[in-house]
Amino acid sequence: MRETLVLNSTYMAVHIIDWQRTMTLMYKGQATAIDEYYNRYTFDEWKDLSQAITDSPNGFVQGFNFKIAVPEIIALTMYDELPSNEVKFTRKNLYKHYDFKCCYCGKRFKSEDINLDHVIPKSRGGKTEWDNIVLSCLACNFKKDRHTPQEAGMKMFYTPSKPEWRPAYALHLHTGINIKKSWQKFIDVCYWNVDLEKD
Image 1: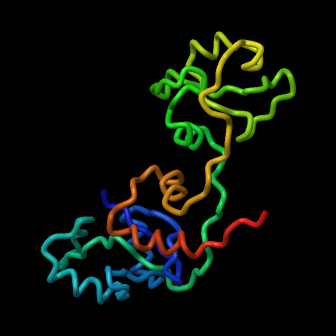
Image 2 (image 1 turned 135 degrees about the vertical axis):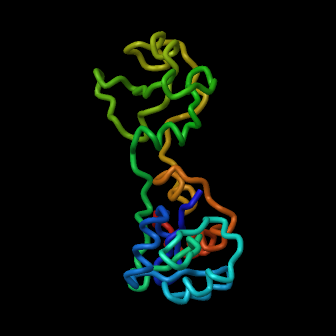
């Protein structure tokens, strides 16, 4: 796994990128490598430091006459904004939010054996949005047909909901990449410092 956590210039986690993009940003001076003590290293400084590193969790990139470790964390030199605090309404995020479980029988399924279901059917004015979409296995979907769960006599194991935005969760949903241990304290900083939504 050679992905890098990207921090903005105030050390808030904003993205996860691959090693090629990491090295490009550093080489262009748009980002610096960050160690566990918040020390920043330019590309040249990181390249020099890499000569003394024997083991890098993200591996190395081999240059013509040098090697350079792929940093696990970089900070952008100019960007100080935060990522959107909205979880995008996508099929992937719905499947993740409901953990691939059917709302009507509660069982977990493979993605090809489960689909999206409008709790209030579209044919009856049901919207395609977080509070009306759940996952349903094929058997339950067939049983429910064009009815509401109440009309079909089907119990719901959970009610439709929008996932709560959390930095680590949002980064995982956007990228599908698991959060590394070395990233956690930077993600925790983002958690404690992000603006809360007002009522």
